[in-house]
Length: 342
Image (cartoon, rainbow, N blue to C red; front, side):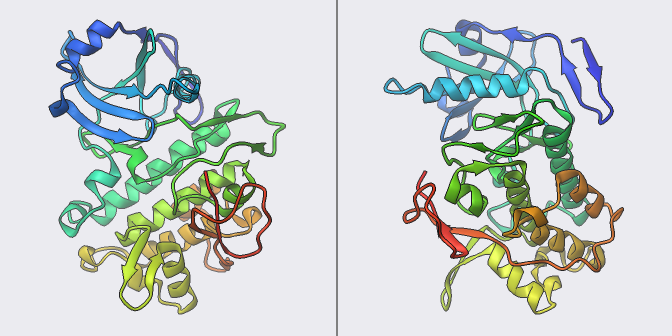
């Protein structure tokens, strides 16, 4: 495949394969349930093996007959990925359009997603040393910085979360699932759009107003970074307090000058304390309620690598969307724990 590189290591692909339905059906053994490796709001993903022996992931998109939503998501993902390539973005190999059927074909990721491989229990997390967690966190940040700042028009992913970060055989993170992504030209400060995404990762300003910016992805990344360091889910249930959001817990510990206690106990103190606490503080900087205070992704990378000293940077109050049912798009609400209905 012919490619050209840019200054950050991204590449532009010049070839794109259009598969036939027959090819993909054969590759996945007729989309057999035993080949299923993932399922989400926009379709099911199957592991497949092409005629040349290459393993791929085939995403079968849901096409709703009463609306064009499925087709829109398909077009968005093609537009987002066809011309870009980066070490930390999933590689789109091709697609298939046959009648009402829509398929996307990606490289297969041997270690599934962060949600599947990392979250969900101590046994999972014990496989992830501090070094691996640091490398994954940096890789995700680099992929997002490339989308936000190098690709033109810029791309806002709109659904950064653990299940959309795939891991290859070397545990290199790949940002995936661009079905909700939006394109931004240089002269656009924001776009107004239907709110979509995942509770816990959604930035409050986007959830309330529908105004989407690159800082919306920065917020989601901050939540993901807190997850990577703490090993905690975005929402935990406590018998005394009820539901407690990770963002709130981190803010509470920051104010108590006790962020170190939030670091995942399965690491058994086998990590550089200063770096771990710095990562948690950067996570909190990314989820600040005031969008102007959130760092761009390239700045976040420099903070993570300690090229920018954050010792004297104070964290302001984080924003949080805690309830899906009450706040409508465009409704003004000064409460930090706002809500929306997608």
